[in-house]
Each structure stands twice: as C-alpha cells, then as structure tokens.
Length: 179
Length: 387
Image (cartoon, rainbow over all chains, first blue to last red; front, side, top):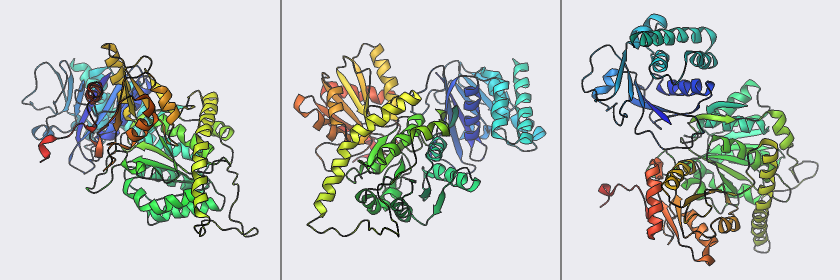
C-alpha cells in the first residue's frame, strides 16, 4: 500500500485533489481511498487530505502517519506545519514553490514546481490543486495523465475540465522534463 | 456498477433506489451530505418522493411517523444530538410499529461538543425497539439499506431500523462502491405494502392510550417481533447474496477465527483496520481472529456463542462507554452474556471516543491485554490530561 498526504489551506481544494487523485487511480484499476482530516473546514487554515493506493481492497481506516508521498500546495505552510512528518525514507515531496526550502529531511526526493504560476497562466486563478495532480503523476507514476483527464472530465463542466487538463499537463511535462 | 464515490453519496444513492415516498430530515454533521444529496434528487426529479423540510430532528421523525402511518415508505437520517432530540419519537415509531429506516452517521454525544465518530449515539437507543445494523465500509452501508427495508416491512416484523455507519470515517471517505441498478433493487425490494394504515374511509388510531390493562402486551409484542427478526434478517441477507453476490446472511461475520485463541469483537469501520492487524499478527504466528457484529439489535447471541466456541479469551473493542456498569462497554455486556456458560473471559476495551484514531498498534495492544487477562479499561488514554 502507498499513502499520500496533501497539505494545503482551506479553500485551495486539497480534499478535491485527494478525491480526484483517488478517482484517477480507480480509473486505472488501482484500489484507492481518499479522505479529509475530519472537521477542519475553515478558509485559510492549514488542512490535510489523504489518499491510499493498493492492488487489493483497502480496509485500513486509521489516519496516515508515514506517507510515501506528500504534496504541499502552499509552501508558506512549512514554517507552521511539519509537512515532512513521517515521510518515508525514499519518499517524494512535491512542493508548490521555486524557492529554496530549508530543513528538507535527508533521504527524500524533492520535486519543486511553481504550480501557482502555471495555474495563473492557464486557469487565471491561483488554484493549484489540479496542476499539482499533473506533477504528482509525473513524479510518482501512481496515476497517468489519461486517468487524470478522465477524472477531471467527470468532475467538471467541459470548458473547465479542459483548462484544468491543460494545467495538469503543463506540470506533468515540466516535472518529466526535469528528471 | 462499481464506481468511486463518497460514503454519504453511496448511501443517498441506495436510499433513492429504495424509492422512499417521503424523506424528512434535519441536516447535522456528519450526516449532512446524505440529506443534501437526497434533497437535490427530489428537486431534480430523480427521486419521485416528497422531501419535507422541518425545523428540527423532532419534527423530522414526527413527519416520518405520520407519513409512515399513512402508508408510505419513509426515510430519515441523523446523528448524535439530533438523534437525542428525536428520542421521544424514536420510541413512538417502534411502539406504533412503523418500518421507518434511518441512517445514523455515528458521532459522539455532547457535552463536550464533538462532531467526530464513536457509537454512543445509536447505542443509547438500544432498548427503543429499532433494529440496529452497523456497516464496515461504504459498500456494506449501501447494501444494508436494501436489507433493512426488506426486513422492516415484513408483516410479521414491522419494526424500524437504524443503519449505522461511522461518521466521517465512512461518511466522508471516497472509495469504490458497487451500486446496484434500479431494476435489480426493484426485483429485490417490492413496493411497501402496509398491513394497516391511516385511511379516512376506514378510521383507525395509532399510538393511543394504553392503560395498565393493555400496555405490557405491546412491549411483549415488540420484543417478540425483534426475536423473529433474526431469521428474517438471515433470509433477506441470503436472498441478497444470491442476487448480488455479497453475503449478509449472518448477523455476525468471522474473520480468521478458525483455531483462534484470542478473538477481537467489534462493530463498524474499525473492523477493516482490525482485519489488517489480524493478518499481521497471524503472519507473526499469533492465533487471532475477528468477530464482526453486523446486527446489534436483535443481538445474535447464539451466533456469537457459536463463533467464539473454543477461543480462550475475547477482547471487545468498544466505541462507547456503558457508564456505571461493571462491564465497561455495551457490546461487551452482550458478548459476555452470550458466552457466559463457557466461562471464556470477555473484556471491554474502550477507545476511539470522539474521533480518537484507532491504529493497528492499538489492536495489537488490546489483543495482548486480553491474553494477559487485563480487566476492562480504556485504551489510547492521554494519561497526562488526567489528574
């Protein structure tokens, strides 16, 4: 089983991202489970959402303490929240920033991407969740772009879905190009 | 069709497939997503029933009671404080023998105010005359609604039922669920055929005064119907298994109990975590299994006794506290009674209250405690907060 923890702020669509990633995994015939950190719904406050992936039915219901992957939607969270807590050795951290980040733990793979810039260019809004899905797909291989497209088209009206697909693709290409 | 969806939306879809003619509910966390979705379905014409908006849970279940007495198939949903507010009507529904199905998105009772999961809410209405089912995952929560209506509406049962699923842990989690088609459910669950109903042409009263000369027989009859419900649940679960391939013919379900020395007994979503912990303990050579209780009312004492035959000790994981009783949890009390003659020790270990997370390591710890014969106690307590 692999586990993902998403850090964001209320209003950034962390829970939606978790649901979309789980949906994309489901479309790829992988068992998945997505859930929020229960009860935290205030706009701007630090929030978390979680996804599990497995090749068999997922029964585990506890929260996620030792993720294989983290996504950080807002790098200003890093000074307030220990976003790296429990991240496994060899784990992947996908962070929305182009700045240097102090205090990166040893033995993890850091993937930096300026998702805000991509989102502003393509969506015209600083909503980075779908962009970061593309980066997650490229960095981890847990989900593919085709499955992301399917999940986004199912969730959003056509026009919005295509824009978000474009943003996810841009991040996907950028991360793939960087490896 | 297998799809990935939120637990609450799977339940709303199950309710739609049951074709309720009247839905009345008052939104309360973590039940809200179910009733929001049902209100949308009614507004969009996807559910051919009436959604009665009310100002409180008391009115919600009162509306349901009237609609059911008038001969409609009726649905509601609530949790915690909302259920407490309904309590008077909860007893009335059972007393008037109306087969209403209500989803409980299990949540802790205040005070202190807490919106997170445990099972104290439904368990405090243990003696109300409602059947009580507990779901392990979104699939089971979905399927139990079909089975609950089927059993509740049988003329020799006519009892209401709670379908309980853990708030947030199941209600707010996205996971794969196989949702049956309308044709499949129509073939399994025929339209409600009330035994008697309010009818101006044939006047009849429900819930009238019963003096000491009559009251006791009403209570006797409710209990007799509850006892009969065990067989009806097995049959309805068995028929469901034949049609849909998912077997709910047992009121309990064993997991790796064969040759087990220690059995863990639990209800609801924590059974999934326990199964993973049992697999790990089995891999380490420990003889451990799980007995999941799917139906708490009627309580399947005979099945529990049979399933636990031969085990040396029993750890009951309780998401409730039986305050003031010698046995710490309400489930343990029933289990202990079921195996009483065997002399097998049964311990209640209380935890996960108010949403405190339960991890595999907690399961392993209480298993060890049961082996050591540790008496009833809490697990996961923050000792530093206690004086």
